[in-house]
Image 1 (spheres, rainbow, N blue to C red):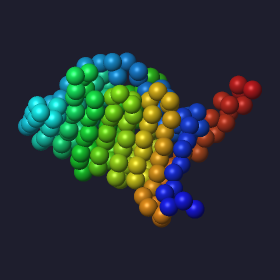
Image 2 (spheres, helix red, strand yellow; image 1 turned 30 degrees about the horizontal axis):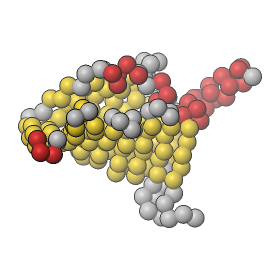
Image 3 (cartoon, helix red, strand yellow; image 1 turned 90 degrees about the horizontal axis):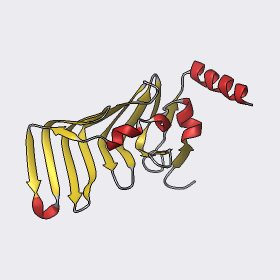
Image 4 (cartoon, rainbow, N blue to C red; image 1 turned 135 degrees about the horizontal axis):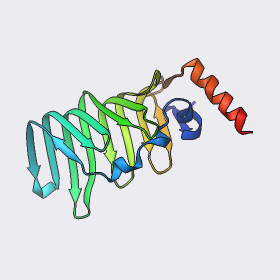
Length: 176
């Protein structure tokens, strides 16, 4: 067995059952980003801004809460944002009106790659369904999620509600 256990699950599989991130509000990602914090440090030579002290980030229905947020920019604009906390949290309302919540010690949003990565004690939850592991990465454009444990003994845990699995099976059967 590989030293690093990596599980790649397509949105039409796992996420259709539990997290429905495929239905994330695309309009959220085109909205302005507002950051509120107790302190801000601008490092012009590094194109970096660090926010600290009860940081709140809003973009459409997206809401991020963190102890610290590091924003990297370049001539092309915003490149990435990394939230740190114990835990940092992420929430968003999906197209179907359902909320999705995530938490981790680090939440990294790479604007150019269009990925959201939860790192260290990562947990993603919608309704009563959860995925947890060391790292969870969601590729927005590919609608694909990867979750992995840490080290050789690391594990990824996914919990589904039985009635939601049954609902999916019933809906799949009707489409045939």
